[in-house]
Image (cartoon, rainbow, N blue to C red; front, top):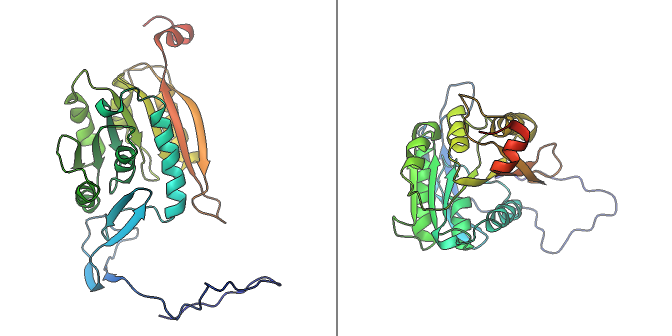
Length: 274
C-alpha cells in the first residue's frame, strides 16, 4: 500500500519510533457496493475480502469488537476523555449504583454503557440502537467484558422511537434510572424527546452530541421548554457542558451536555403550579 509523504516544518526532527510506513500491516479488507447518493444503511451488505472479519479495540478498561457496519469513535484516546466525562456526570447522581439502570439511547457497540458498568457507576444497562451490526457487536462486547447475565445487560436493535416508550414502561417503578443519548448528526427523534421528558424518574440526562450547534441546540430547546401536549412532563435544565476536541485541526468537536430535571419548586417558580 503506497504511503503518502509528508511535508514537515523547518527544524523538525524525526523521532526514532517513527517509520516511513514500509512495515504497515493491513488487518482487514472489505468491499461494499452502493449506488445511492449518501452513506448506505448499516445493514447494507459488505464482502469480506481479506483478514479478520471484525476489529478489536481497547478503550479504557473495556475491549470492543467492531464490525464493518457498526459505528465506533475514530479517535480512541479522545473517546477515553469523552467517556470519563460521561462517567463522572453519572457518578454524581447515582447514590446506589448497583441498583441503578442506565438507559443508553443510540448505544452503538455498547461502548458508553459498558464503560459505565465497568467503572461501577451503574449496575444494569439497556441499550437501543438502529444498527443491527452494532447491536450484534454490543451483545458480544457485553460477554467479552464479563457481563453474561441478561438481567445486567440487554441490547435492542431498533429505531429508538419505536421501542423506547415500551422499554421505559417495563422498568420497575422502584428502579433508579439515568439516561445517556449519543445520537448521530440528525439528533433525537421527537418521540424519544417526549419519552425522556415524560418519564420523571430520569433526573439526569447526559447528551453526547457531534452536532452541538445544530441538533443539540434544537433538542435542548425541546427538553427544556415549558410542557406542552406534545412534550409533557417537568422540563430539564442544562447544568453543565463540556466540549471535547475529538477531531484536532478541524472545526468540529463533540459536546457533552448535562441536563437535570427541574425540581417542583423551580418549576412552580417559573411556570406556576402544575
